[in-house]
Image (tube, rainbow over all chains, first blue to last red; front, side, top):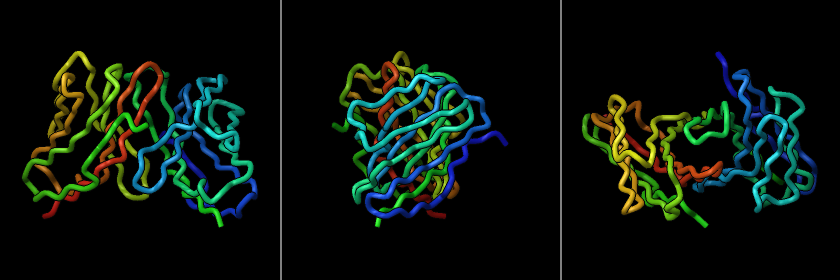
Length: 114
Length: 110
Protein backbone atom coordinates (compact mmCIF):
# COMPACT_ATOMS: atom_id res chain seq x y z
CA UNK A 1 0.00 0.00 0.00
CA UNK A 2 1.13 3.49 -0.76
CA UNK A 3 1.89 5.23 2.47
CA UNK A 4 3.96 7.57 4.59
CA UNK A 5 6.57 5.78 6.66
CA UNK A 6 8.41 7.20 9.62
CA UNK A 7 11.40 5.64 11.26
CA UNK A 8 12.07 4.96 13.99
CA UNK A 9 8.81 4.69 15.94
CA UNK A 10 10.62 5.65 19.14
CA UNK A 11 13.85 7.61 19.37
CA UNK A 12 15.82 8.35 22.51
CA UNK A 13 18.60 10.90 22.45
CA UNK A 14 20.71 12.71 24.97
CA UNK A 15 20.47 16.38 25.78
CA UNK A 16 22.46 18.26 23.16
CA UNK A 17 23.19 15.23 20.96
CA UNK A 18 22.10 15.74 17.34
CA UNK A 19 19.31 13.49 16.14
CA UNK A 20 17.73 12.86 12.75
CA UNK A 21 14.22 11.62 12.13
CA UNK A 22 13.29 10.22 8.75
CA UNK A 23 10.18 10.10 6.62
CA UNK A 24 9.55 8.41 3.29
CA UNK A 25 6.51 8.32 1.04
CA UNK A 26 5.36 6.17 -1.83
CA UNK A 27 2.50 8.50 -2.79
CA UNK A 28 4.67 10.66 -5.05
CA UNK A 29 3.22 13.75 -3.37
CA UNK A 30 4.72 17.15 -3.99
CA UNK A 31 4.43 18.50 -0.48
CA UNK A 32 5.96 17.09 2.69
CA UNK A 33 5.38 18.50 6.16
CA UNK A 34 6.86 18.10 9.62
CA UNK A 35 4.64 18.63 12.64
CA UNK A 36 5.56 18.63 16.31
CA UNK A 37 2.92 17.46 18.76
CA UNK A 38 3.39 17.66 22.49
CA UNK A 39 1.16 15.81 24.87
CA UNK A 40 -2.49 16.94 24.72
CA UNK A 41 -1.61 19.79 22.39
CA UNK A 42 -2.40 20.53 18.77
CA UNK A 43 0.06 19.41 16.11
CA UNK A 44 2.25 22.39 15.28
CA UNK A 45 3.69 22.85 11.81
CA UNK A 46 7.47 23.26 11.84
CA UNK A 47 8.11 23.53 8.09
CA UNK A 48 7.17 22.06 4.76
CA UNK A 49 8.64 21.41 1.35
CA UNK A 50 6.75 22.11 -1.84
CA UNK A 51 8.91 20.10 -4.20
CA UNK A 52 12.35 21.48 -3.42
CA UNK A 53 11.12 24.76 -2.04
CA UNK A 54 11.61 24.93 1.72
CA UNK A 55 9.08 26.88 3.78
CA UNK A 56 9.94 27.52 7.40
CA UNK A 57 7.33 28.60 9.94
CA UNK A 58 8.24 31.90 11.54
CA UNK A 59 8.33 30.50 15.06
CA UNK A 60 10.25 27.30 14.32
CA UNK A 61 13.48 27.37 16.34
CA UNK A 62 16.77 27.46 14.45
CA UNK A 63 17.63 24.22 16.23
CA UNK A 64 15.33 22.45 13.78
CA UNK A 65 16.44 21.86 10.21
CA UNK A 66 15.09 19.79 7.37
CA UNK A 67 16.37 18.15 4.21
CA UNK A 68 14.53 16.74 1.24
CA UNK A 69 17.08 15.01 -1.00
CA UNK A 70 14.41 13.67 -3.36
CA UNK A 71 10.64 13.40 -3.75
CA UNK A 72 10.38 10.34 -1.54
CA UNK A 73 12.42 11.28 1.49
CA UNK A 74 12.41 14.06 4.02
CA UNK A 75 14.51 14.38 7.17
CA UNK A 76 14.13 16.37 10.36
CA UNK A 77 17.40 17.28 12.03
CA UNK A 78 17.49 18.56 15.58
CA UNK A 79 20.95 19.98 16.08
CA UNK A 80 21.02 20.26 19.87
CA UNK A 81 17.92 18.69 21.42
CA UNK A 82 16.68 20.16 24.64
CA UNK A 83 14.29 18.64 27.15
CA UNK A 84 11.53 20.79 25.66
CA UNK A 85 11.95 19.10 22.28
CA UNK A 86 10.60 15.81 23.58
CA UNK A 87 7.46 15.27 21.55
CA UNK A 88 5.76 13.25 18.84
CA UNK A 89 7.01 14.28 15.40
CA UNK A 90 4.58 13.69 12.57
CA UNK A 91 5.45 13.68 8.90
CA UNK A 92 2.68 14.30 6.40
CA UNK A 93 2.31 14.64 2.65
CA UNK A 94 -0.18 16.15 0.24
CA UNK A 95 -0.44 16.28 -3.52
CA UNK A 96 -0.31 20.03 -3.50
CA UNK A 97 -0.64 22.98 -1.17
CA UNK A 98 -4.25 23.70 -2.11
CA UNK A 99 -6.70 23.98 0.70
CA UNK A 100 -8.75 20.97 -0.32
CA UNK A 101 -5.75 18.66 -0.51
CA UNK A 102 -5.96 16.39 2.47
CA UNK A 103 -2.88 15.41 4.41
CA UNK A 104 -1.59 11.86 4.67
CA UNK A 105 0.25 11.27 7.92
CA UNK A 106 2.87 8.81 9.02
CA UNK A 107 2.58 7.05 12.37
CA UNK A 108 5.00 9.47 13.95
CA UNK A 109 8.28 9.25 15.85
CA UNK A 110 8.12 9.71 19.61
CA UNK A 111 11.29 11.53 20.65
CA UNK A 112 12.58 11.34 24.20
CA UNK A 113 15.43 13.55 25.40
CA UNK A 114 17.39 12.37 28.42
CA UNK B 1 -1.88 31.72 19.78
CA UNK B 2 -4.39 28.95 19.53
CA UNK B 3 -6.62 29.80 16.62
CA UNK B 4 -8.46 26.49 16.62
CA UNK B 5 -9.86 25.21 19.88
CA UNK B 6 -11.43 21.95 20.88
CA UNK B 7 -12.57 22.64 24.39
CA UNK B 8 -13.61 19.12 25.27
CA UNK B 9 -10.56 16.88 25.73
CA UNK B 10 -12.77 13.81 25.96
CA UNK B 11 -16.26 12.58 25.20
CA UNK B 12 -17.95 9.30 26.05
CA UNK B 13 -21.13 8.06 24.37
CA UNK B 14 -23.10 4.86 24.21
CA UNK B 15 -23.03 2.74 21.09
CA UNK B 16 -25.87 3.66 18.75
CA UNK B 17 -26.22 7.20 20.10
CA UNK B 18 -25.05 10.40 18.48
CA UNK B 19 -21.54 11.76 19.08
CA UNK B 20 -21.10 15.51 18.71
CA UNK B 21 -17.58 16.90 18.65
CA UNK B 22 -17.15 20.64 18.71
CA UNK B 23 -14.52 23.02 17.39
CA UNK B 24 -14.21 26.80 17.62
CA UNK B 25 -11.92 29.08 15.68
CA UNK B 26 -10.91 32.70 16.00
CA UNK B 27 -9.58 33.61 12.55
CA UNK B 28 -12.40 34.64 10.22
CA UNK B 29 -10.06 34.18 7.25
CA UNK B 30 -10.16 30.40 7.56
CA UNK B 31 -12.05 29.14 4.54
CA UNK B 32 -11.74 25.37 4.67
CA UNK B 33 -12.18 23.00 7.56
CA UNK B 34 -11.26 19.37 8.03
CA UNK B 35 -11.63 16.63 10.58
CA UNK B 36 -8.98 13.97 11.11
CA UNK B 37 -9.27 10.80 13.15
CA UNK B 38 -6.35 9.22 14.98
CA UNK B 39 -6.12 5.72 16.40
CA UNK B 40 -3.37 4.86 18.91
CA UNK B 41 0.03 4.21 17.33
CA UNK B 42 -1.20 5.50 13.98
CA UNK B 43 -1.04 8.85 12.26
CA UNK B 44 -4.15 10.98 11.81
CA UNK B 45 -6.29 10.10 8.80
CA UNK B 46 -8.62 12.41 6.92
CA UNK B 47 -12.29 11.99 7.77
CA UNK B 48 -14.40 14.78 6.28
CA UNK B 49 -14.11 18.40 5.22
CA UNK B 50 -16.23 21.44 4.50
CA UNK B 51 -15.72 24.62 2.56
CA UNK B 52 -16.72 27.94 4.07
CA UNK B 53 -19.30 28.42 1.33
CA UNK B 54 -21.31 25.54 2.76
CA UNK B 55 -22.91 24.97 6.13
CA UNK B 56 -23.20 21.21 6.01
CA UNK B 57 -21.40 18.25 4.50
CA UNK B 58 -22.45 14.67 4.96
CA UNK B 59 -20.61 11.41 4.34
CA UNK B 60 -22.37 8.31 5.58
CA UNK B 61 -22.57 8.39 9.36
CA UNK B 62 -20.46 11.56 9.53
CA UNK B 63 -21.80 15.08 9.12
CA UNK B 64 -19.91 18.31 9.61
CA UNK B 65 -21.80 21.51 10.34
CA UNK B 66 -20.29 24.96 9.95
CA UNK B 67 -21.63 28.11 11.61
CA UNK B 68 -19.49 30.94 10.27
CA UNK B 69 -21.14 33.68 12.28
CA UNK B 70 -20.33 31.80 15.47
CA UNK B 71 -16.95 30.59 14.14
CA UNK B 72 -17.96 27.12 15.17
CA UNK B 73 -18.03 23.73 13.54
CA UNK B 74 -19.15 20.37 14.77
CA UNK B 75 -18.81 16.78 13.73
CA UNK B 76 -21.80 14.51 14.21
CA UNK B 77 -21.44 10.76 14.17
CA UNK B 78 -24.66 8.81 14.11
CA UNK B 79 -25.04 6.07 15.03
CA UNK B 80 -21.79 5.86 16.99
CA UNK B 81 -19.91 2.58 16.90
CA UNK B 82 -17.15 1.23 19.18
CA UNK B 83 -14.75 1.43 16.20
CA UNK B 84 -15.23 5.19 16.19
CA UNK B 85 -13.30 5.39 19.46
CA UNK B 86 -10.31 7.57 18.58
CA UNK B 87 -8.93 11.09 18.92
CA UNK B 88 -10.57 13.57 16.55
CA UNK B 89 -8.70 16.64 15.38
CA UNK B 90 -10.34 19.68 13.89
CA UNK B 91 -8.25 21.66 11.37
CA UNK B 92 -8.79 25.00 9.67
CA UNK B 93 -7.09 26.26 6.54
CA UNK B 94 -6.32 29.63 5.03
CA UNK B 95 -3.79 30.51 2.36
CA UNK B 96 -1.31 27.69 2.91
CA UNK B 97 -1.72 27.89 6.66
CA UNK B 98 -3.43 24.94 8.35
CA UNK B 99 -4.05 25.01 12.09
CA UNK B 100 -5.08 22.08 14.21
CA UNK B 101 -7.01 21.84 17.42
CA UNK B 102 -5.67 19.80 20.34
CA UNK B 103 -8.11 16.97 19.71
CA UNK B 104 -11.04 15.31 21.47
CA UNK B 105 -10.81 11.71 22.60
CA UNK B 106 -14.05 9.93 21.78
CA UNK B 107 -14.93 6.70 23.56
CA UNK B 108 -17.93 4.76 22.31
CA UNK B 109 -19.09 2.21 24.87
CA UNK B 110 -20.75 -1.03 23.72
